[in-house]
Image (cartoon, rainbow, N blue to C red; front, side):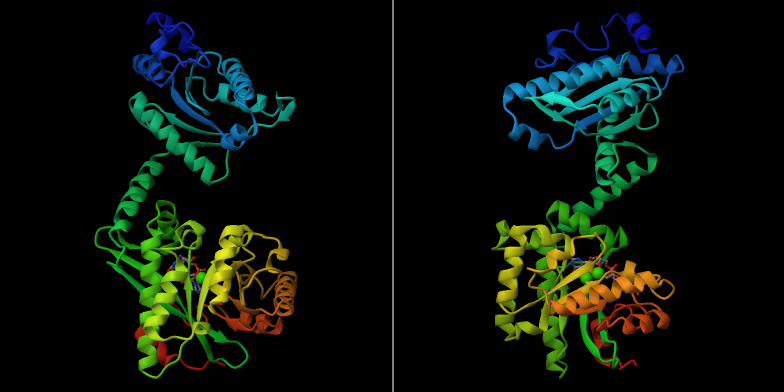
Length: 440
Ligand code: C2E
Ligand code: CA
Ligand code: CA
């Protein structure tokens, strides 16, 4: 057990109360980070030698900023004191530390017993400022020596695991070997993306969207591809979310707009008037970045090429419909004459009522609805309902991910206007687009 080993190395445990002040958090009296690292590094080899499995648990209160702005200093102090009490009671024989504001860490060797007690105890509300609060936490666990062999690295690994827990919506995640590999790859992608701001190693493919009733080409969607010399071909499903979080989506997104419009110009020169849809990310539409944002890039480019904006559509994901700032920017883009399409509709289970005030002219029905539409009548009934709703709001519908003839027949029956998917065409190089044939 942790205390016995600790007694042997004559350090005080469980709360850190007896530790010298340099090692203590003044607000809670628990260990601070320095204290936990110092004491932990002494204990780790001894615990392992005694056949224990020491682990670091990194723990953060969720929504702390919202709590801190809702309550005053005194109430936050009460809250932190109650959390401290719960932790000391739950992680009985462990080293407990508070790093800063809402961040805590524990060195335990109890096979998760303490954490189970703590999470159980949190199910009871805490009373703060006369209000009953249900606190939620996210935790990451790193195990010695599998995840790392010293306290600093264990804490880093546990922090990374906590992030993973938050991203996957779980309260707890354990640092796994493959997480280390994924983090390294993620960092490499994040760094490499900054070198792509002018489109280095990037190219666009174009996927046709077809009119279902007569099989004619309705337009194309530009899809980004990245062939990195060392990382290989990285899927946009992997790198776009990283670019969004890191901010490099701004220069990359601007490059996509310029490149796609340049291509539209090339087709036009060759006598093909092809409607173009471009995917844009939330950050590109956020109000703070108007100078570098979508509308200014679009306006300067169409000015150069003398384009009619109605032949250009921006695809935004349905999650954005709830963000008032972004929707104001979307409205500006629509007011300037560009088309707006709501992408992946139905994937995030958003409320249909959000469509009422949306300036979109196109609704793209998510692939998940198409998958078993051929065999499931209830699924088809939902698609029919969405199509009717879109039509009554003056919007046209595109179904995404059509792969089989059977699906297409049913979707046509449900009244969908356009289809996109491998059944028609996969994303293709720009030069192939003019040879797209009618498909009835
Ligand atoms: P998305 O906008 O929903 O694009 C459709 C994705 O489905 C594309 O994947 C396309 O290749 C794929 N797809 C098309 N037809 C079928 C089909 O019949 N079956 C299946 N299984 N898949 C089909 P891709 O190109 O890998 O792009 C993934 C996502 O990355 C896109 O989803 C979009 O959200 C994002 N993305 C791609 N290019 C850009 C870009 O230039 N800017 C931004 N912000 N996001 C982009
Ligand atoms: Ca799209
Ligand atoms: Ca989509």
